[in-house]
Structures are given as C-alpha cells and as structure tokens.
Image 1: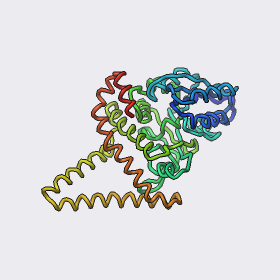
Image 2: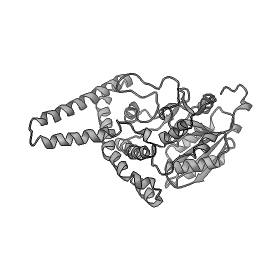
Image 3: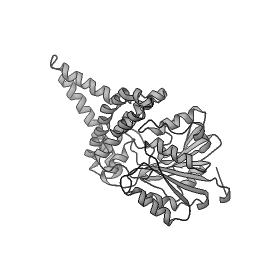
Image 4: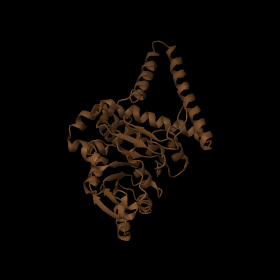
Length: 358
C-alpha cells in the first residue's frame, strides 16, 4: 500500500492491553507518540486489566500531557483476548495495529506496517528484537520462541526472519505484539477467543487464513521487546505457552505439531528406561547416552550462540534456558490436555481460577 500523499493514508487504531507494566509503559507510549505517521491519522487505545501498580496513573499522566495523537484508556479485567476485543470495540480505524506495553517502536514502525498491505493481505507483521541486551535476555532472544526476530539463532541453519514472506498457510508468519490487521477482517472472525491464556497469535491467524486471506512478514516493521529478564520469568512464560497450545489445538486441530508433545513423551520414555534398568541393568547405559547426547547438542548450540553474539557465557547459559523451556512443556502441555475441555466449556469461574495458576 504505497501512499505518496499523507492525506491518503488510512486511519489506524494502535491498541494494547496492559497489566502491571509500570516499568515499561512510559517508554512504550512515548515511542508511539513519536511515530512519523501523521498524528491525525492514528489513535492509541490502552486497555488496563486492573493493574495493581502505577500503570494506569502513568498512562493517564501521558494522556493529560499529549494533544495528538488521541490516547484513550479503558479498563477491562480478563485474559489478553478480552482486553484486545475491548480495544477493538472502541477503535475508529480501518486498520488495527496491535502492540504490547513492554515494546518500544521506532518512528517508522506504523508506516512500514501499513506499506506492507496488498489487496489479499489481512495482516502485516515484523520482527520483535531484544530491547535490553542483558545476558539473560540475549540468551532468551537466541531461542525461537518469541516470534520472528533478527536475534534468533536456529539450532541448525541460518536466521529465517531476514527476508519478506507472504503466506496463506503459516500461522506464525506474524505475532500479535507486532502486527496490523484490517479491521473488517477482525470483525469477520469475531476477534480473539477470550477463553485462552496465551497462544492467541496462532488462534487468531488460523481463523484469518481459513477465510482465504494471506499474512505478510516484513523485516522493516521492527519493534524492540523487553524479554523476560530472569530464567524463572521465562519459565512462567513458557508454561503459559505450553498449556495454551494444548487448549488451542482442541479448537483448531490443524495447529497440532508432533514436536509439541515431544518433551513430555521423551521424559516419560526416559523414566521407563530408568525403571526398566532395575530389571535390565545394561539399559542404564542407554539412559546415560541419551543424557550425554542431549547435553552435547545444546552445549554445541550454546557455543554457536556464543560465537554469533560474542558472549562466551552463553555456552553454559543457553543449555539452562533450553532445559527450562523443555521442562515447561513436559509439565504443562499435559495439563492443557487434561483441562482443555473444561476451559473450552466457557465456565467463566473455572477459566478465571485456571488462568490465575498461570
């Protein structure tokens, strides 16, 4: 969508849901205010999920000090889909650009997203790079679990996110923290599913692709994301992803991938081998071999990341991060399988209690 005349640019609603983000929300909003997109051509809608810190006060202070673009604050308790649907209901734009309160966007972010639209494209997204550059966030950014990013270091091969991509089938072409959608398409699919804790990106995107639209990834629409700053925080994030993926797979079976239950299956297999070694002692050597191969594989991966990022400490830190990631899926993917029927029944009281566990 090339627009030489700025008067012809579409009006865009930039939306975000926030919860206890006093540490990052000011920087996020200031970056959105300073976009090079015409100030009268976009609005910012913030939906707070009843934060217990100073998030709302910070947002309101920025609203009071900002003339353009218009910023509006609403409150709606619930999961991320609830907040985003609430934001959609108040939006005026023909396009909806979604971001999060822990993001920082460059001045050309929105322009690059809108420029990416073509006739059959329903959504355009870009990479989510590491904002902090601390040791922990650098390690986390290497692993391909945060969506498209220039920081990703694949276990094998090269970074797949350096080139533009147009797809009518890949639900991970974009992630919601850095994607703009046509509002009419979001209305058509009735927005986000409000029952799921996370994995809202593939759930939304699969509904769009089923309608025959395409999604586009452009490396030009870059944002900076404040990744989890501790291993425990990363583990909590991954357990939400794991339990939610099992639930989303029930809604859309085509989202199931054989690799999703693999950590759990591999762990159970290892336990069976250990138990069997009491009767067949030589099996313990197979157990040791599996553990050694696993450790060697990810120490090698840590070495690859260390060489690319010029940080030797990643050699030992990457295997620890990977272990936390895999353990989250060992424990919590099966929980999603167990509880997904109850979650998808729409029992609001159960969903509220279940989500508080995560």
